[in-house]
Image (cartoon, rainbow, N blue to C red):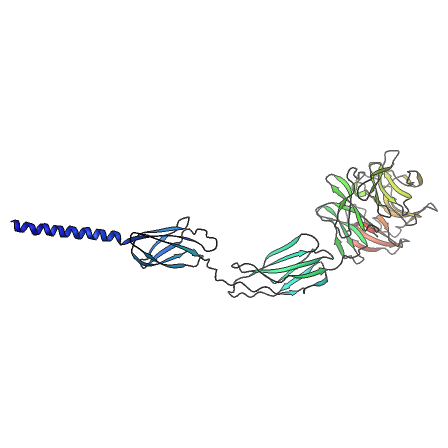
Amino acid sequence: MKNYIKPLYIGIFIVFFIACSDDKTDFIDHGSLTGRVVEANSFDPIENAKVTLSPTNNSVFTDAEGYFTFDEVLVGDYSVKAQKEGYLAGNEPISVLADANANIIFELELSDALNKPPLAPEIISPIDNSINLPLQVELVWHKSLDPDEDALVYGILIRNDYDESSLVVENLTDTTYTVSGLKHGVKYFWQISVDDSFNELVLSEIYTFETTSFPNNRFLYVQKANENQVIFSANETNEFITLTGNNQNCWRPRKNLVTQRIAFLKNVGSYTHIFTMKPDGTDVHQVTSQISLVGFRQDEIDFAWSANGDRIMYTSFDKLYIINKDGSGNQLIYQTFDGSFITECDWSQDQTKIALKTNNINGYNASIFIIDMSGTVQSQILTNVSGAVGGLNFTVDNQNLLYTHDISGYQSSDYRQLNTHIFIYNFAAAISTDMSLYKEDGTNDLDPRYAPNEAKIIFVNTSNDGVSVKQVWMMDMDGDNRELLFDNAYMPDWE
């Protein structure tokens, strides 16, 4: 019995030893693998990237911070692959050691990282250093070649030597673009960019062109646009330039040749003030500020330059003021004795005489008379007449004065005029001559101005219905040869 028991104990011991040995071997033959997946350039974490361990093909996904973990990995050599849509897959070899942690970091490149950029655009026209170009220019360039045949879009950057402004045009698929609204006499710098959506923008060479010099337009007039009045300059063939924007109300342009500035009226809130600007519409300067122009109907109010351009004469209710062109030295020089409004004025070339038109609060009972610089009345042309009156303009020698009068004598609350004629008053003979004998019936002649050589008269003609389109005309000094100059235009000036 004792002989059988001893071998049994030996067998149980061997089995226990083997079992313990297997457990110990399984524990020390494993390790772990951790790591992180990030973008190659920014090193930002990549979430939900798939990480695969080969040859086991076990897979895990990265967390919000790009980390991943493989636990209980058998000791050995492996290939680890990290991949996500939009990125180039990464493969790295790694060895897992017993009872140790292996760590690996993947820096994935975007899938377009191997994409090649397109060739730089080549400009066709206008050729570099072009001059005397119009204010609308067509820009043309060759289509760029792309090694990967990617879809391309173009952009344009235009700068100038005039101010800090620039023009940026984007997302062009064509290789031509017409740029408009350019300024006269300005040098422009332009460059084409091409974008394949994968690489940095590729830029062309920088080319330059220069627009034509500002024209010597002799005519000024006003048109209605966007419910505002807009000032234009034009030549005899009606090639015109917009001087003020349609987002502001500007009217009654008057140019002074000595200062080469245009004075005009403009709304500032609910007030009307005098401004000046250069002939191209730039360098706008407000002249009046404390005392605005007020009277019967703001569109009837007029003002006058001094001949040398150092001062401007204007009206406010029953008062007449003179102000320096820079806005200083505002001076009251005349006030009506009966409280009637001074609506219009003109200043003689030698600055010794002033023509005034006064009227009542409704625009009627109008008078035209001449005062000297001390306010003394020199002569009376019209006195308390019925019907609308206006349009004052001296000749250079102060011998004649243009004016208008509605000879129908009609008066109404809406200031409608039925038959307004242009007259020339001669001071020596004290006689007015009707210049509208050839006027079409049912129309009014308004806002007359002498031509610079005083051989013709420029004026407005329109239907007496008060709502029809106004037109700027020209006629000889005998009232004959009436010629249409500008359609849909009014308040002309010719210097």
